[in-house]
Image 1 (cartoon, rainbow, N blue to C red):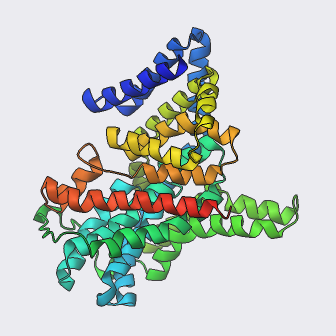
Image 2 (image 1 turned 90 degrees about the vertical axis):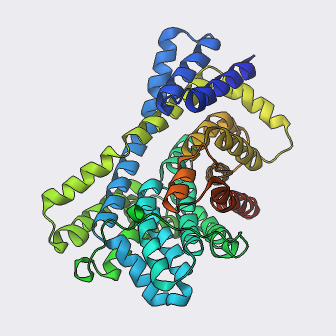
Image 3 (image 1 turned 45 degrees about the horizontal axis):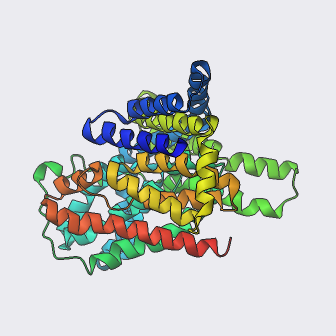
Length: 438
């Protein structure tokens, strides 16, 4: 019976989001209450469970996503993103423009939400392609592959951060493993894949060209831009890698772990960026604070959706459904990692949203984290890979790509959808290989 109730709940979630176009947060809460009713939970317990699920999920993520959004917006509005693009093209040369743009997408994408990164970087891609005479699809897809990979694999992006919290995964290890998987996934799904895709002539509309191109004198230095954009990764990665060489409980190790904590790393970077990309660039403190306010307002709905998924997960646990599902999943001979990837893929195909697919899957497979020896960090990445699969007409990213590149649906399916699916498969293969060594 619990499996039937959950199946009906997930089906209802699909219908509310896809058919009735209901907001995902509202849909999550309705389904959560419905599953609680179906499981016969007392009303006061049900409400308490929802509150605990929302609170436990958001307690850490509000800081991560909020600081990450502010930093990403600062990198964009200061011209650092444009400088990184220009600088890498100069370093690698015009003949390696694809590699330069791909690296730009990866560096900027680490701290910038996907939709923001898309809107900021794609017009720059148009400018680069027109000035070099290269194929727009050939230049654009490697950059978008980088943005997609950072969106699906790497904290502080919403889905991998939320999954890490839900599974109790170490955020530093998730980041390092994610980068290890990201490199081959981007290379395969970007520069390599574009060689085999059908020839598509993209002709972007003029209104999608860069609305603001900074003059050279307005740009921060390349060193400043790169250092500020990458500092959170450097601090988190350094702390994770070096902590094993110090005595447990030592004061030095405590300070290293403190500075390498994702919240502190982002906070320190934001404070540094406020000066290096803001005040030192002749921006007033009020101007910088307006940038931060705009950034935070843009993630409100993302936080609500994540909180709704946290409520669903808590209801599944408190009502006993998770233990029941966990017992059933243990029977299958499939790898838990493969199982998580398959479920995320199916939900992604049905709902469209990678974030919703990842968070919904987390509630279903969370018992496997407690009942098997599977690495929670690799489970985050397996689900993240599945959540990027088979993007089609129900995904907002599909339409962003179609409209900006001025393609028809068939051309978008043969380029964008193939690229996203390639990332999902590459990510899964990387997870399964990495699982042999962890």
